[in-house]
Image 1: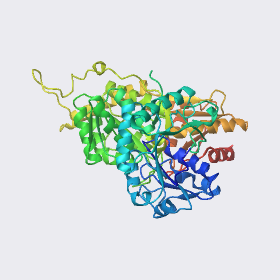
Image 2: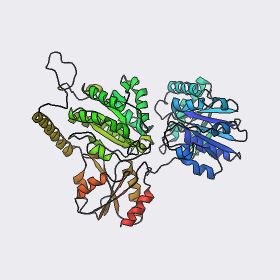
Image 3: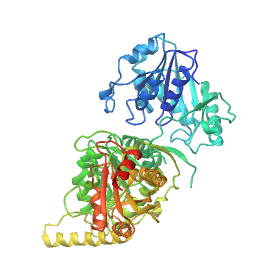
Image 4: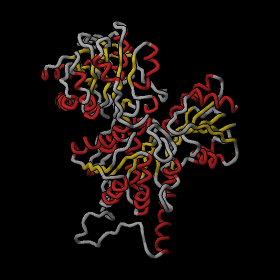
Length: 222
Length: 351
């Protein structure tokens, strides 16, 4: 779970590492503790499976969702509404920034540096060790450094999100934690939490456990 | 088989191509396919392959033409408007009988369209697209695992017949993530030997000529007839399809690609309502499995085609059914994906 010693939470990582699912679940987690929670979708990279697809669900829970104006929502345009900066610095809100994947997604975070530096911000790097380019300590270290440079932020926490969707097993989660622990020891970056799906919620994890409900299930799933 | 990994559709096709022995990739980014190009840019250097971002799709397709002339496995990927731009080159490649694998991650159209999934490039894929009498072998995968298998198959079939092949995906397949098991890496020394025709150095032998053209119309006609002989063999040998719960079905839903996958849900929902529905899912869109579908015309009361287009494959369904039974159609277009509920409602209206 997000570290509530901070008021702004930036979630970065490679494509498909699970940033948006974690951001959505974290917004709901924070909403249980705080009156005012905002989530900003600054994913200008991927045209599918973005926070903006779940606006209604979140707004019904009283969570403020910041996305491009509705008429541009499905455009392939890099739109960052000015409200993003406002909610980053607004002291009354716990704010989650859901970035796009890879270096390009993190570049957008870098563009918000002026706002992020004004507030207590934590940056999380999400890792699914079952993804391409994320299955060795060296690769993970390399991409932490690359994305951190683009985001113009030090990575404060790692998030262990090793999974194969519905085929996730305890073994996958634990071996992902093990790899991430090695990364953590080498880089000195602590692991904030380990994501586990609802159907494995009782397993024992090395790091604090965050049970995730999947939002982005789609019509093609039998 | 290796362990499973979590991949996006675009990455799955890219990795499958590399494992099938493709070391040459030329492409140009376009949503919702860009991740395939990006994946290749990261991955090709790791396997001593070549990644080259072309200055346009027109340039990319001509790079393919040249590279394929050397007999090596070569591929590109693009999305609808980009594939339209490539059509002149596709026609040349088909005419020159070169094995090339194309990937079209289809988005809404026509024109610029949008970046959401669609199946409205079916005519372009299966009935031409460029000029002249030619065919591509066209595969429509429903899942990432199937996309991986069909990508390897596309390379083998392209090599076997010296003919371009096309993976017709859509934005949904390109962008979705699923666990996938990849095959082992193909040993490059086991790839088909193309030394009898490829441009690999003419020292000590007569030069080879690769062209789609002859100035003598009778010779050009002979070339065309040769292509047709090849297409006949492909029609005989390469048809693929899946039947889902068709054994006792009197309603046959026909759908391909991701729509075919969604249609399985619709079949199950219909059966819960006591409707004996089944799915016929063509996997090769050319050659189209006409005869296999025609066989179902005796048992079925109704054929119901569902597409993410305004009705393209439905014409092939009608050709197969040949007037024996009614063929109905439901489609959404412009990037809208029909939901199982709306398709089921339409089906219930029809019966």
